[in-house]
Image 1 (cartoon, rainbow, N blue to C red):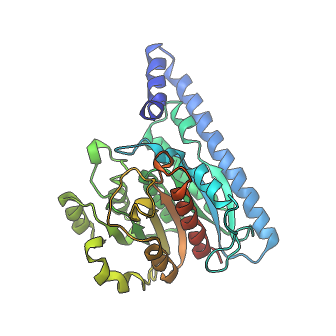
Image 2 (image 1 turned 45 degrees about the vertical axis):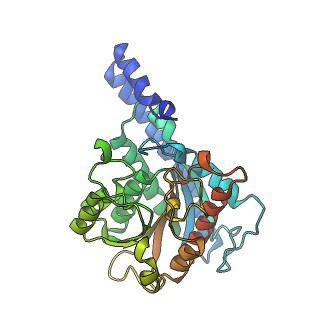
Length: 338
């Protein structure tokens, strides 16, 4: 996977070595980037027009896949997650009704605008600065089509930065963020990579995109993680004190006075007994019902969300973690749609 992830950069180096004119290469890259945005724009426009014609929806979750894995520090399998999550959502082993009674077959509840073609863009030698911009612009295109709200399928956790940035910029201000994860992902630049999946929330806090950041499920945190948390005023809830904190976390009220609530769920926030298909296995995590209790009881206007770090290459043969990720998406859909 690492070889695949670096293919675009190597291809670019080969072109440079062959003395391909820089302007020719840039024009080609720009065409590919514009084509990817056109695809998302037209898909979102179609779904938005459909929902407005049907009427009755104030907000509707819309899936947007971002199959990015090259910013992972260990394994890059999360790049393969979006299609596996979609397959599990619609696999037929369960009905299409969420626990709160929302019907996923109703397009006023859930639509899908497809994937950002991450690998195809990188194959053209597009760097991460521009790639993150394409992800942000894709999210904004979804938000332009009222009543769509982006529910993003990762991908590694580096995608949360461009997604949160886009949502905050589009809404015109910061949000409250609920972040479920085994790790705080707040290193300044892990292994020298400012876009590392372990640094996404440092970028978010530096950008002023969050008023409050609540991190829940933490059980693998370094000295830098705690120092960065203090620097940015992050509310870090570690698993070692979860029994004491449970009442607080199952009765959260967020988003008042800001532009709404953003939820980011890293699948490794769950104990590996519930979700073994992740790159970084950290025992001692949340149960699936713990997560649902937090989400179901949350009071606030959820304007966008992501589910990240599911690694199909480490899943069980029967796709247990895919079903877990799909259930998270289903319940987040219910929370977002109205």
